[in-house]
Each structure stands twice: as C-alpha cells, then as structure tokens.
Image 1 (tube, rainbow, N blue to C red):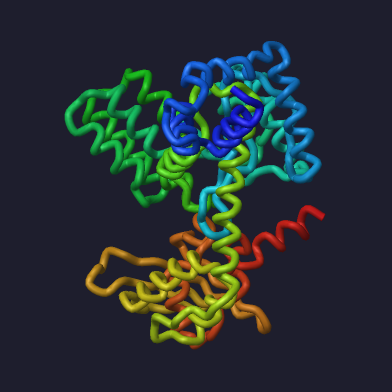
Image 2: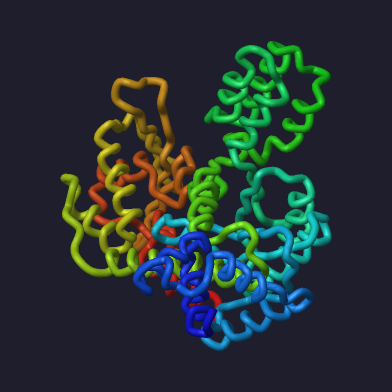
Length: 410
C-alpha cells in the first residue's frame, strides 16, 4: 500500500468506518477491485502493523491526550490501562444524557474505584455530586461512601426488580415486591408492607431479602422521595448511552484508538446540546394553555424540553380542587384534592413573605425532580400569582443553567 492509500484508510477508520467496509470505496475510486493494487489482507496487515506499539500503547495514548489538551482545556486524564471502562454520565439542562468523564482501569478493587472517584472529584474542582446512581455493585458502593459520603446513593430500579425475580422464584413475589418498592407511603407504612410481604412468601430466613431490606434507603420510594435525582431511576438512559457509544467504539481498539473514538462520541453529544441551546434561545414558544401569564413566564426561563413538561403540569391543574384551607400564624395550608379521586390528597403550605412567596407541597416533587408540582401550581392559579416564585425554579432546568455553573466554579 502506498503512503496515500494508508493515509486514506486511516482517515476512514478515524471516522468510524469499519475495516471490512473500507475496501469497497477503494474499488470505486480505482475503477474496480482488479485495479486497486493491494488486497484486503494487505490492508489488515497494515492495520496490525500500526497497532504493534506494544508497551508504547499507553504512552501513545498519553501523547494523544496531551495534544487534545492543547485545543480543549476541559480535557482531563491521569492514567490509562487497557481493561475496563467506567463512564461518568448525567443529565443536562435539556434532559439529555451527557458524559462528564471516563476512566480506564485494570481491576475492580475498592481502592481502584476510590482512586477513580477522587480523580473525578479533582477534575470537577472538588464539587461533590449530590446524588449517585449505580447498579448496586458492593465494591463501588463502598468506594462511593468513602469519597462522596454526603451524596445520596440510589440503585437503579431495574436492577433491584431483576434481582428480586432471580433470587425469589415464588409465585407473585415479583409483583408484590414492586408494589412495596414503588408505594408512595410514609416510612411506617412501608415497614408494615414489608413485614406483610416477608410473611406472605415465607422469607423470614432468606438472606437476599435481609440484605435488600438493609439497603432499603437506596431503592424504596418512601426513603428516596424528596431527594433530587434529576428524574433518573431506570437503566433506560444507561442503555441508550451504551447504544450510542457502540456506534463509535468497537471491540479490539487499543487505548489510543478507544480514546479517539470516545472523543468523537463525546463531541457528538456536546453538539446535540449546542443544537438544543440554540432552539431554546431563539424563537417564541406557542402558548398551549389558558394560563398565559404563568406559561409565558415559564417559557422565558425553562429550556424547550423542560417547558413541554411544565405544559403537562399546567394542564394537570384542571383536575385539582381545594378541599379546605387552614390559617396558621405563619402560613396558609391548602388541602388539595383531585376530581373524581377522593383518595388523593396533598397539603400545600403557602408563605407570604412580602416581596417573596414560598410554597411547599407534601408530594415533594419539587425536591425530587426539580419541577413544580400540579398541586403547587394550582394554588398559584387560585391566588392569581402570574409568575413562578423563585422557590419553585431550579436553575439546572433553565436556559441559564450553564452560565450559573461557570459562576459557581469561579
């Protein structure tokens, strides 16, 4: 293969074109397979020759990252060993999956995970995460407790339910377990429901049931309610991210190749965010509810995707009604119910502090998801308050979310 052929082949590989698909474009370029001048085997041999960097693999990857740092000051990397990849992902202000960092590790020990988490913390200017969601790996759980002791650690609901089905084969247990898991009740009621579940299925001496109960604060809704997890609770985002990464990264990549294609994936994700930033910043949203003042104010602060969710909340208020009010020395308590559903009741506390008002709802949706609940918004409409008060706005869902983060880091 000539130097030009090798350069063209490498360019196509850098763009994510599989090796097996590269040979055909050469045939089209030269006017047929017989005129190419080299075989597919020659091409594979050339690729293997380029990959034979042996102990220089990590050094080559390091040099690649140093070059990246010259053009991207946000690039952060400390070590690389070609074994397992840990990806730190989350949700941006458009509710898109985003990648913060990745780590390549040689083993799965607690000390290795501690090292990874500490380096990630350093990369984030020592700003600790408020919440962490994992699949429940015990070694990672211990490492998180050591490095991020104040973070709320939650387990993916899918993993818990899947393990329930694998460990307890009794009829109806999986269904009964999910009812207990998702029950929107107080802690005392959860305890009673759990005891009934254990007795019903005869699990008093079951080891898995005991271990699962010990970590109940990481999966039961009554313990998680009020803790902010940005709406994450299933593995769907994780699976979506794996699928997206699979379009860029193939098995058999060495460290340098992996880093190159991983960076391509990150660039694609960042571009999607830029596109949404543009859509949210330009153009006026059409009003979709009768509550124009409140909706117009929400449109001025929320990103486009989050505004759609708020539209649903506004429409949900039409199902609400005031059952009773109670005046205290400091605030008014509104008991809010739902038409045609007498069992549903919530308490909204309204504080009038002069220039600023404050609302708190017993559903704790604002604390859990960062979004106003329909019960609180309904009280705003009843009181003819034309804008969302500051207490009901979480910066991370607004158009200025990234600007706020820059100020905080400075």
